[in-house]
Image 1 (cartoon, rainbow, N blue to C red):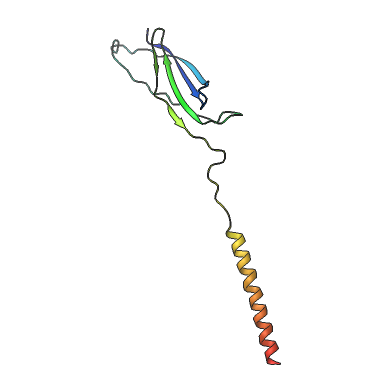
Image 2: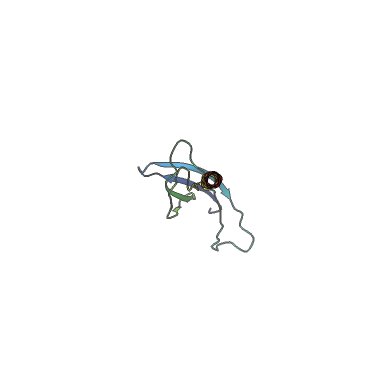
Length: 117
């Protein structure tokens, strides 16, 4: 009776709308001598960004047998567009500093040559 079940992953957004993400059916055979004992089986699922929507919301896993339904507590995910983008001012600063030092060197050399005459 409990060897056949369905695993359903779904998402509830900030407006309370429920969206099914993934569903699969399982049929787990019971090994001889393990009847009438509790068993735990782990199933992993990778959450991918949802198309055309923000993926922010609470994600749930639900398992259904013929007469029983169990649901996880849910995991809240805050999705951001690009995440952290490191600024690259290194080259700009280096080029500006080099240009400034070159201009000062040329000006100092010109002043020294002018004073000599």
